[in-house]
Amino acid sequence: MQTTDIPPAFQSLIGMGQLQKIYKPRGISVLTEISYIVFSFGMFFLSLYYIPILYKTSNGITVEVLVIALSVPLMLYIGVYILRRLVSWWNNSAAVYQNGLAYLHGKEVITFKWSEIDSIKMEAINFRVFGYVPFGQARDYRISSSSADLRLASTLDQIDDLMAEIRQRVFPSMLERARQELDSGRTVRFGLLAINQYGIQWGNDYYPWIDLSTDGIADGMIHYVPKERRSFRGIHLAVSEIENPDVLLALSNDMIKQSHQTGACSLSERKE
Image (cartoon, rainbow, N blue to C red; front, side):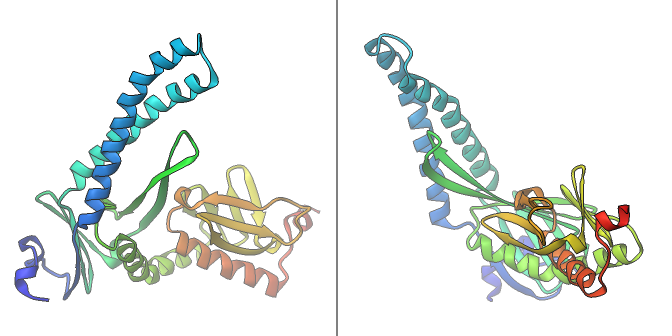
Protein backbone atom coordinates (compact mmCIF):
# COMPACT_ATOMS: atom_id res chain seq x y z
CA MET A 1 0.00 0.00 0.00
CA GLN A 2 1.49 3.33 -1.10
CA THR A 3 1.75 6.19 1.41
CA THR A 4 -0.11 8.48 -1.00
CA ASP A 5 -3.15 6.19 -0.74
CA ILE A 6 -3.30 6.52 3.05
CA PRO A 7 -5.32 9.42 4.53
CA PRO A 8 -3.08 11.59 6.77
CA ALA A 9 -5.23 10.77 9.80
CA PHE A 10 -4.24 7.09 9.48
CA GLN A 11 -0.48 7.65 9.01
CA SER A 12 0.66 8.56 12.51
CA LEU A 13 -1.29 6.38 14.92
CA ILE A 14 0.86 5.03 17.74
CA GLY A 15 0.72 1.43 18.91
CA MET A 16 -1.61 0.17 16.18
CA GLY A 17 1.02 -1.84 14.31
CA GLN A 18 1.15 -2.32 10.56
CA LEU A 19 -1.67 -0.86 8.47
CA GLN A 20 -3.28 -3.71 6.55
CA LYS A 21 -6.35 -2.35 4.74
CA ILE A 22 -8.40 0.82 4.30
CA TYR A 23 -12.16 0.85 3.73
CA LYS A 24 -13.44 3.99 1.97
CA PRO A 25 -16.94 5.14 0.92
CA ARG A 26 -18.21 3.20 -2.06
CA GLY A 27 -19.49 5.39 -4.87
CA ILE A 28 -22.35 3.08 -5.83
CA SER A 29 -23.47 2.89 -2.19
CA VAL A 30 -23.61 6.68 -1.95
CA LEU A 31 -25.59 6.87 -5.21
CA THR A 32 -27.93 4.16 -3.95
CA GLU A 33 -28.53 6.09 -0.73
CA ILE A 34 -29.27 9.25 -2.75
CA SER A 35 -31.73 7.35 -4.95
CA TYR A 36 -33.51 6.06 -1.84
CA ILE A 37 -33.78 9.63 -0.52
CA VAL A 38 -35.16 10.97 -3.81
CA PHE A 39 -37.66 8.13 -4.08
CA SER A 40 -38.81 8.45 -0.45
CA PHE A 41 -39.41 12.19 -0.61
CA GLY A 42 -40.94 11.83 -4.07
CA MET A 43 -43.44 9.26 -2.78
CA PHE A 44 -44.12 11.44 0.25
CA PHE A 45 -45.10 14.50 -1.80
CA LEU A 46 -46.91 12.39 -4.41
CA SER A 47 -49.01 10.76 -1.69
CA LEU A 48 -49.87 14.14 -0.16
CA TYR A 49 -51.01 15.32 -3.59
CA TYR A 50 -52.91 12.15 -4.48
CA ILE A 51 -54.81 11.52 -1.21
CA PRO A 52 -57.30 14.46 -1.54
CA ILE A 53 -58.00 13.52 -5.17
CA LEU A 54 -58.58 9.85 -4.30
CA TYR A 55 -60.75 10.85 -1.33
CA LYS A 56 -63.03 12.94 -3.56
CA THR A 57 -63.27 10.38 -6.36
CA SER A 58 -63.99 7.57 -3.86
CA ASN A 59 -66.64 9.64 -2.06
CA GLY A 60 -65.08 8.97 1.33
CA ILE A 61 -62.44 6.98 3.15
CA THR A 62 -61.63 3.65 1.52
CA VAL A 63 -59.00 1.00 2.20
CA GLU A 64 -56.87 2.45 -0.59
CA VAL A 65 -57.05 5.92 0.93
CA LEU A 66 -56.08 4.56 4.35
CA VAL A 67 -53.13 2.58 2.97
CA ILE A 68 -51.73 5.60 1.13
CA ALA A 69 -52.35 7.86 4.12
CA LEU A 70 -50.45 5.48 6.40
CA SER A 71 -47.55 5.38 3.93
CA VAL A 72 -47.07 9.18 4.12
CA PRO A 73 -45.31 9.29 7.53
CA LEU A 74 -43.40 6.12 6.64
CA MET A 75 -41.98 7.66 3.45
CA LEU A 76 -41.05 10.81 5.35
CA TYR A 77 -39.36 8.79 8.09
CA ILE A 78 -37.35 6.68 5.62
CA GLY A 79 -36.26 9.75 3.65
CA VAL A 80 -35.16 11.68 6.75
CA TYR A 81 -33.46 8.61 8.24
CA ILE A 82 -31.38 7.92 5.13
CA LEU A 83 -30.60 11.62 4.58
CA ARG A 84 -29.28 12.05 8.13
CA ARG A 85 -27.25 8.87 7.82
CA LEU A 86 -25.75 9.92 4.49
CA VAL A 87 -24.81 13.40 5.73
CA SER A 88 -23.21 11.93 8.83
CA TRP A 89 -21.30 9.20 6.96
CA TRP A 90 -20.44 10.98 3.69
CA ASN A 91 -16.63 10.85 4.01
CA ASN A 92 -16.16 8.27 6.75
CA SER A 93 -13.44 5.65 6.32
CA ALA A 94 -11.95 2.81 8.35
CA ALA A 95 -8.50 1.27 8.62
CA VAL A 96 -7.58 -2.19 9.86
CA TYR A 97 -4.21 -2.45 11.60
CA GLN A 98 -2.33 -5.38 13.04
CA ASN A 99 -3.34 -4.38 16.58
CA GLY A 100 -6.70 -2.73 16.08
CA LEU A 101 -9.17 -0.58 14.16
CA ALA A 102 -9.15 3.14 13.36
CA TYR A 103 -12.23 4.99 12.14
CA LEU A 104 -12.29 8.47 10.60
CA HIS A 105 -15.54 10.37 11.22
CA GLY A 106 -15.27 13.94 9.95
CA LYS A 107 -12.01 15.15 11.47
CA GLU A 108 -12.17 12.80 14.45
CA VAL A 109 -10.24 9.52 14.54
CA ILE A 110 -11.59 6.82 16.86
CA THR A 111 -9.27 3.92 17.63
CA PHE A 112 -9.83 0.51 19.18
CA LYS A 113 -7.29 -2.13 20.10
CA TRP A 114 -8.67 -5.58 19.29
CA SER A 115 -8.39 -6.62 22.94
CA GLU A 116 -10.30 -3.49 24.06
CA ILE A 117 -13.51 -4.12 22.09
CA ASP A 118 -16.10 -5.63 24.43
CA SER A 119 -19.37 -5.31 22.50
CA ILE A 120 -20.55 -5.95 18.94
CA LYS A 121 -24.13 -5.52 17.72
CA MET A 122 -25.43 -6.19 14.22
CA GLU A 123 -28.74 -5.39 12.55
CA ALA A 124 -30.13 -5.43 9.01
CA ILE A 125 -33.07 -3.05 8.54
CA ASN A 126 -35.35 -3.95 5.60
CA PHE A 127 -37.44 -1.12 4.18
CA ARG A 128 -40.75 -1.97 2.47
CA VAL A 129 -43.20 0.25 0.61
CA PHE A 130 -46.81 -0.24 1.74
CA GLY A 131 -45.49 -3.04 3.95
CA TYR A 132 -44.94 -5.43 1.03
CA VAL A 133 -42.64 -4.06 -1.69
CA PRO A 134 -38.92 -4.38 -0.79
CA PHE A 135 -37.19 -1.00 -0.74
CA GLY A 136 -33.57 -1.54 0.17
CA GLN A 137 -31.68 -2.61 3.26
CA ALA A 138 -29.63 -0.68 5.80
CA ARG A 139 -26.93 -2.46 7.77
CA ASP A 140 -26.37 -1.18 11.27
CA TYR A 141 -23.10 -2.31 12.86
CA ARG A 142 -22.01 -1.05 16.27
CA ILE A 143 -18.89 -1.75 18.29
CA SER A 144 -17.88 -0.37 21.67
CA SER A 145 -15.22 -0.47 24.34
CA SER A 146 -15.03 1.01 27.82
CA SER A 147 -13.87 4.31 26.31
CA ALA A 148 -15.68 4.68 22.96
CA ASP A 149 -18.75 3.69 20.94
CA LEU A 150 -18.81 3.47 17.16
CA ARG A 151 -21.50 3.03 14.52
CA LEU A 152 -20.01 1.86 11.23
CA ALA A 153 -21.19 3.55 8.03
CA SER A 154 -23.05 1.18 5.73
CA THR A 155 -21.77 3.27 2.78
CA LEU A 156 -18.25 1.89 3.27
CA ASP A 157 -16.96 -0.34 0.51
CA GLN A 158 -17.11 -4.03 1.52
CA ILE A 159 -18.75 -3.18 4.84
CA ASP A 160 -19.71 -6.82 5.42
CA ASP A 161 -16.10 -7.92 4.91
CA LEU A 162 -14.94 -5.24 7.36
CA MET A 163 -17.40 -6.43 9.98
CA ALA A 164 -16.36 -10.04 9.43
CA GLU A 165 -12.72 -8.98 9.90
CA ILE A 166 -13.54 -7.20 13.16
CA ARG A 167 -15.51 -10.17 14.48
CA GLN A 168 -12.67 -12.54 13.66
CA ARG A 169 -10.00 -10.35 15.28
CA VAL A 170 -11.85 -9.70 18.54
CA PHE A 171 -13.35 -13.17 19.01
CA PRO A 172 -10.42 -14.82 20.89
CA SER A 173 -10.08 -12.11 23.56
CA MET A 174 -13.84 -11.67 24.00
CA LEU A 175 -14.34 -15.43 24.31
CA GLU A 176 -11.55 -15.74 26.87
CA ARG A 177 -12.98 -12.94 29.04
CA ALA A 178 -16.48 -14.39 28.94
CA ARG A 179 -15.22 -17.90 29.68
CA GLN A 180 -13.32 -16.65 32.71
CA GLU A 181 -16.48 -15.01 34.03
CA LEU A 182 -18.46 -18.23 33.54
CA ASP A 183 -15.76 -20.34 35.22
CA SER A 184 -15.82 -18.01 38.23
CA GLY A 185 -19.55 -18.65 38.64
CA ARG A 186 -20.79 -15.29 37.36
CA THR A 187 -23.65 -14.67 34.94
CA VAL A 188 -22.64 -13.23 31.55
CA ARG A 189 -25.10 -10.97 29.70
CA PHE A 190 -25.45 -10.78 25.91
CA GLY A 191 -28.19 -8.19 25.48
CA LEU A 192 -31.58 -9.85 26.07
CA LEU A 193 -29.95 -13.19 26.88
CA ALA A 194 -27.82 -14.12 29.88
CA ILE A 195 -26.00 -17.39 30.59
CA ASN A 196 -24.31 -19.11 33.49
CA GLN A 197 -22.80 -22.55 34.05
CA TYR A 198 -26.21 -24.19 34.34
CA GLY A 199 -28.43 -22.59 31.73
CA ILE A 200 -29.69 -19.60 29.79
CA GLN A 201 -32.00 -16.78 30.91
CA TRP A 202 -34.43 -15.07 28.53
CA GLY A 203 -36.66 -12.54 30.25
CA ASN A 204 -38.40 -14.41 33.06
CA ASP A 205 -37.72 -17.81 31.49
CA TYR A 206 -34.75 -19.97 32.43
CA TYR A 207 -33.69 -23.07 30.47
CA PRO A 208 -31.03 -25.55 31.68
CA TRP A 209 -28.38 -26.56 29.14
CA ILE A 210 -29.37 -30.22 29.55
CA ASP A 211 -32.83 -29.41 28.17
CA LEU A 212 -31.42 -27.92 24.94
CA SER A 213 -30.21 -29.89 21.92
CA THR A 214 -28.69 -27.28 19.58
CA ASP A 215 -28.10 -23.58 19.02
CA GLY A 216 -27.32 -21.53 15.92
CA ILE A 217 -28.10 -18.57 13.63
CA ALA A 218 -30.47 -18.71 10.66
CA ASP A 219 -32.31 -15.93 8.76
CA GLY A 220 -31.10 -13.23 11.14
CA MET A 221 -32.39 -15.12 14.21
CA ILE A 222 -30.64 -16.94 17.04
CA HIS A 223 -32.29 -20.27 17.80
CA TYR A 224 -32.06 -22.57 20.81
CA VAL A 225 -33.88 -25.84 20.13
CA PRO A 226 -35.13 -28.00 23.02
CA LYS A 227 -34.46 -31.75 23.15
CA GLU A 228 -38.14 -32.40 23.73
CA ARG A 229 -40.34 -29.94 21.89
CA ARG A 230 -43.25 -30.73 24.18
CA SER A 231 -41.41 -29.18 27.11
CA PHE A 232 -41.09 -25.68 25.57
CA ARG A 233 -40.82 -24.04 22.18
CA GLY A 234 -37.22 -22.97 22.52
CA ILE A 235 -35.67 -19.54 22.12
CA HIS A 236 -35.93 -17.63 18.85
CA LEU A 237 -34.55 -14.11 19.03
CA ALA A 238 -33.35 -11.56 16.44
CA VAL A 239 -29.58 -11.20 16.23
CA SER A 240 -30.05 -7.42 16.55
CA GLU A 241 -31.24 -7.98 20.14
CA ILE A 242 -27.98 -9.73 21.07
CA GLU A 243 -24.52 -8.43 21.91
CA ASN A 244 -21.53 -10.53 20.82
CA PRO A 245 -23.56 -13.34 19.17
CA ASP A 246 -20.42 -15.22 18.09
CA VAL A 247 -19.20 -15.51 21.68
CA LEU A 248 -22.68 -16.36 22.96
CA LEU A 249 -23.10 -19.25 20.53
CA ALA A 250 -19.59 -20.59 21.10
CA LEU A 251 -20.05 -20.66 24.87
CA SER A 252 -23.60 -21.97 24.86
CA ASN A 253 -22.69 -24.70 22.37
CA ASP A 254 -19.87 -25.82 24.68
CA MET A 255 -22.17 -25.75 27.70
CA ILE A 256 -24.85 -27.80 25.91
CA LYS A 257 -22.26 -30.43 24.93
CA GLN A 258 -20.77 -30.55 28.43
CA SER A 259 -24.17 -30.91 30.07
CA HIS A 260 -25.01 -33.86 27.82
CA GLN A 261 -21.64 -35.52 28.46
CA THR A 262 -21.80 -35.15 32.24
CA GLY A 263 -25.48 -36.00 32.43
CA ALA A 264 -26.35 -32.86 34.37
CA CYS A 265 -29.85 -32.89 35.76
CA SER A 266 -32.63 -30.96 34.11
CA LEU A 267 -34.60 -28.14 35.72
CA SER A 268 -37.52 -30.45 36.43
CA GLU A 269 -35.23 -33.01 38.06
CA ARG A 270 -33.60 -30.38 40.28
CA LYS A 271 -37.00 -29.20 41.45
CA GLU A 272 -37.88 -32.76 42.49
